[in-house]
Image (cartoon, rainbow, N blue to C red):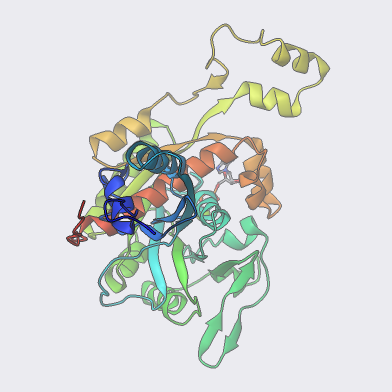
Length: 388
Ligand SMILES: Nc1ncnc2c1ncn2[C@@H]1O[C@H](COP(=O)(O)OP(=O)(O)O)[C@@H](O)[C@H]1O
Ligand SMILES: [Mg+2]
């Protein structure tokens, strides 16, 4: 029997021990955010779950380490701690007019102009979020130049189910594109109002189901489609893809301004084709002599010299800073991205061992964090009473 003076560890003690441990992106206490779940105490063990706001959280490892450290420092010695990292993607708190039922977040991917890799980024973002375990849809809103089906290797005609359209699915990714409704070399000839109609059908008639994220590949520029989208549904935010050339940055700035005018939050800017990594290329494609050079590290004097910044370095990051937009990362030019896209296997650019993976995943995780930051911004903190 326990004497009265002996203290029994309770859930409150565990939560109190975690006071001050913050989610670095959200800048708030994990306890206040309701992220500490399923606290169990017994047999010399404390187990709990940290329920993150996205499975693609870039701070996962740090949060886990911070939680462990706080528990070890503040709870009695000799206990075992079991920390499970879980995630549940949060949407915004309150429903709004125009929401798609079941879809928590809508991410529009735009660019100032074509050919900057916007579709490649949109598809990579969708694949990356899915790889982290989120449920994801990818809608190709580039009605005149649909390229998503080609990039991800999807084909077929979407089926109708009653008055709904069933999206095409590739490895669990739900897809809709004008490309599924046309023959490959059939041109799209239509006026603005028809364009609006198609976009609305893609949004409202497609059976998207429950999605954590719906990624939308916008057409390049600042035309009808972004306007039509922004007016008809609440978009969580937009990503602007650009390349490093000075002129491309000007176009990107215009895209950022457009989203601001449309009251679509800008989640961040991505610099695609930022540089070319000569060493990575030689490792991948070089012959025996090149390999010897690469292994001997005698190619270049200084680390970093292997990166060729053809169009200058850091331009997009500076532009993002100047416009007060988060910078989501650089993605280098890599022949594997182009080849994978051409044969409909873009997903392989994100797989383990691909030289592009760390860059693409970096963008995906930074973006997921920005979505969470947006959603948690206006959340009022519940007053949790913690008794010591
Ligand atoms: N980082 C990259 N490295 C190499 N090739 C790329 C990269 N990003 C895009 N590409 C290639 O550039 C071309 C244009 O990309 P795409 O995504 O279709 O651009 P957009 O949608 O902006 O018109 C495609 O052939 C694609 O494979
Ligand atoms: Mg495109």
